[in-house]
Length: 383
Image (cartoon, rainbow, N blue to C red; front, side, top):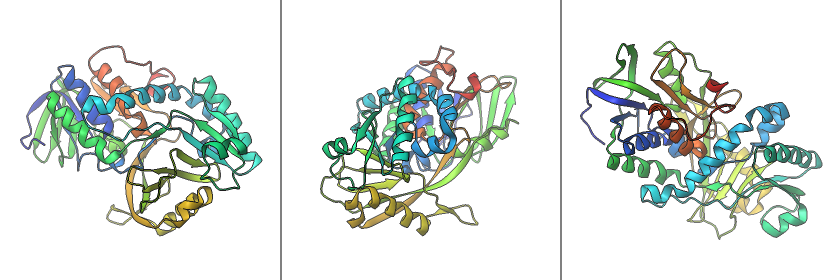
């Protein structure tokens, strides 16, 4: 990445995850003069350290926790995610790099009648939003997923969900953005941000940079960046962990969830099983993250209860990530009220899945164009 920080740019993007990098890519492709600043390594937080799941359907744990009223309020976001998946399918070709994108379907597995009833209710709301989730019987499951435990009595199947390789994605997008003309600086945290009559000035250890417009795509740190301008965002960072096992024989083509608890389970190209689903990591007194053994054992037990073969695979590595989240799961997308030229590009919890469309919409707004998709009902800023 370029080491000499320029003193000015037309657009400054803060945050080097998938949303920030793709926003910089789209802006550069459209001829904008854009500089991106990342506090650490590119994609080292949620974008490069997540489990690589590409989500579309309503998340089951949140559906049963918050209920149908929450689901109906969130449902417009499913259309946003659906269009983001369209962009995912062409992303490897766009960045000239295989990203391991495979949409073989996502499967929520139930073991009780109460869980099945929730899956049916969830599928009804998803259908109203244009997302098809098939309700499956036990016999249906045996046909498409014979690897599941015999206790499974049914489930919900969304054919468009799947996976991508997060370790390849952010470097490939960064390389494409550089080729398009963006200037990217890693290890360049923003320590100050102020509004001026001409736009904004950001302070870093490498100097100050003035920009007419700023995009806040800082994920879990977005609230800190916004606070520099006196803006309060209802967003926070949550420490989560993911585990990968040793390679096993080809077994699981799907993205697998459990209706009994938090789980995302998939098999990657080398045969390893990637196991996550929102289990918490621990925050040390110095602020660094470490894996929590209790989360490891709980997550692995949940996986083995759904896919018995997962219980026979040895865990090789666990890692942590800061994931940004909002209490209602609603995205914060668009120009900030009272701060002309300051744009927010924040899609909580499933930001990896939503990254391409988050970037496309943000780039459109920064360039003064109608967004590729209406944000009405999606972003809290558009209510």
